[in-house]
Image (cartoon, rainbow, N blue to C red; front, side):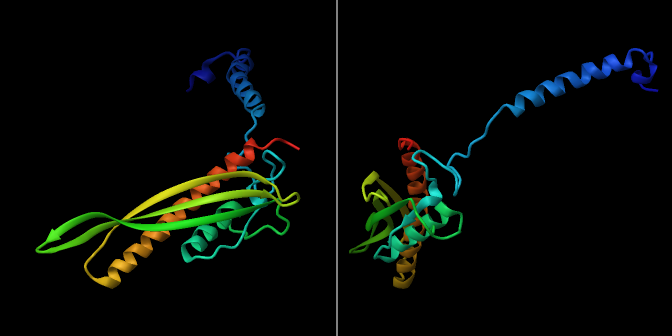
Length: 187
């Protein structure tokens, strides 16, 4: 037999009220809370009235810049592609450089054994209606890799490092754009 059943029947409603009271209070407090997505919604409004989903990314010219653009479009619109009627246009200028990070001397050769890809982007966010720049910035990413002696493997390792850097740079740009949109004055 439980302690609840041992209580007189006249005290049971009071006990239920004592048990349910805090639960109801917590539910009332929680219902007053509002939650807003950190990066906004694709159709939601941040700052000047457009969210990340209202940004169209202009075409680029290089392979690694196209990698950044593709990842950025996917991240901005949740895989839905470019918006039909964008509020903002994004101009990207992406550069990628290779540098030897470490060298190991073998006999009389100075053979590099590690490398790094440094990928940088300057961006400009443009209001599609007025054509004026509303935000700009610069982001940079490093991706290191081992450089083997085989030529094809070395080229592939450098390409993989470029792809990793492009993914990371696109994510950094997405966060920077969310911050820029949040700081825009409301219409």
